[in-house]
Structures are given as C-alpha cells and as structure tokens.
Amino acid sequence: VRGRDEQRLSIGVEDGLGRVLIDPTRPEFSPNRALTGWGLVMAQLPTASTALPLAPPYKLRVRRHGDLPLETLTLRIWTKHPVVAGSVPSAQELLVQVVNAGGIVEASQLARALERARQIWRQAGVELTEDVRTALDSHVQPEVAHVVIDPARGSDSSSLKALLQLSSLALGEGLPLFLVEDITLAGSSGAQGQLWAISGGVPVPPVEATARSGLALSTALLKQDPHYAGQIIAHEIGHALGLFHSTEATLLPASASAPATAIHDGFADTPACPAQADADGDKTLSASECGEFDANNLMFWGTPRGSISISPAQADVARRSMLTR
Image (cartoon, rainbow, N blue to C red):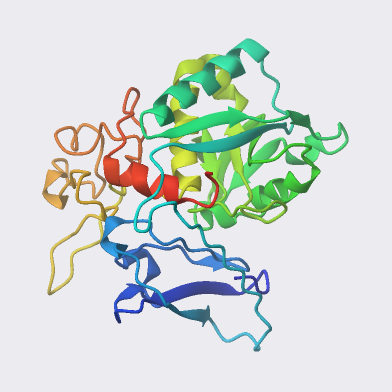
C-alpha cells in the first residue's frame, strides 16, 4: 500500500475463516507479523506457520496513523499459486542482481560471499542464481555510497529509501543487492555504530524502484571476512523472503498484569528463547543467553558467526515468497 511519505500506515488482514491474521492496531504482534511503514507498507501471507492453512477470501484493512488529511491510497496484491494446492515446490530459484553503489571490493571476495549465501539457502530448497551485475553511474555513487540508518526509522530511513529506489537503473532482474561503502547507525544523539547489511523490508516487493526494493551490504565486511559476509547476506535474504528474527533482541517490558516477554517468529519448529533467559537483566536476549534455544538459527537477530540453520517451516515460507520462482 502506497500513500504520502509522511503518513505512517499499517495493514490488517482477516481470512475466510474469520481469523485475524494481522491486527492493524498491533501488526508486529499479530499471528502473522507485519511491519508498519512511512508512505509504503507491505505484508506477506504467510510469514509464520500460525497463518496456515491459508483460507481465502481475505478482508483487507489499511490503518492510517495520525491526523493527516485523507488521501488516495494505491493497493497492489500479488498471488503465487503452487503446483499442488496447499504446498509449494520443494525447490525454488531466487534471482539476485548485484549493483555497485560505490562499494569497492575484489571480485574474488564477492564471489566467496555469494557462494556462502548460496550454500546456506540451498539447504532450504532455494537456489540463488546471479543475474547481470550493474554499476550505478559514477556521479550517482557518491550520493548513495554511505547509507545512514536512523534507529527510530530502520528500513524507513530516507538514506536507504533513496538508494533502493535506484533499483530501476539496474540492468538485470531479481532481488537487488546494493554494494555500498558503509552503513552507519545515527539517530538524534549522533553516531551509534555500524551495520553490515540491511533489508528494505520484511518482505521485499517483487518490483523495482520502490523504497523497499532490495538489500544494502557494506563492503567493509566483504573485505574483512567474505565467508561471514555470505552468512549476513543469507540472513538479509531471509528478511526479503518474509522471515522475521526467530527471537527479537529487546524484551517487551513487564506490566502490572504480565511479566516481560520475548517476541518470536511464530514458527513451531524454531525453539523460542524465553524472557527468563535474560541472565544479566539488560532486557536484551543475547546469543550466549539463547544458545540452547534458537541462537544457531540463521534468522536469530544477532546473526552469530556459524548460525546457519533454517527450519522446515521457515524454508516453506521462504519458498512461498513472490521473489522465488
């Protein structure tokens, strides 16, 4: 759903059985999770096994947050029909196109990273295939090579949006992977650190030129450790295909009626790291604290080195993505 850039939107979905799959007032805490968005919001069914079996027809609601004047919203819907009803083929292809957006890296380092990402996703029945590589014009690269992410906006940060909208300039097809010089976290209090990579959203749309069309990867990591960079690419591809973190980092605070709780992905076969695992009491679930639960999963929030497992349910959702074929 598209609207004004300054308008925050959320999507709600009810299925033919009367189940509320996405609550537009609390989309991130719904049985089928979805994110809100500024000017552009997307949702995917399913992103969790709790949304299965899919039961059309669907009732769709769009919620506008705030008091801005009414506007005309544009809605686009894609559907993917499996060969066998209720299932998806056990093997799917994901076409990826590399776009040089000012990140300088040796071809051998990039090849190692892409091969590692390919190995990781092959275990889930998704074969990564690379299409034509593209380089943005030399006068454009300096404008987008340094991506700045506002922690409060995440993938809605203006710097990332400006980069991903350039996907229309790519010569190939498939999921755009933009190579940039660096990705910096910087909020109102100043610089707060760096990111290795970021997805345009959960999920990424199957079209070019939107503010969510692709992934950004810092070549700083590619130069340091191509093998680990491949794991990071695989993690961000998971987000593009509709997968959320198996466990989110920050606990929801306790209230008068409920203790602190952890946010999970809704898959029965990814072990849920409980809030009680927060041994140091910092309200954040670390990889060491979740070691006996889901820290070895590819989609654990911290992407610990060597954590590459993908559950059957996660693989099923990824193969249902509109990006795979």
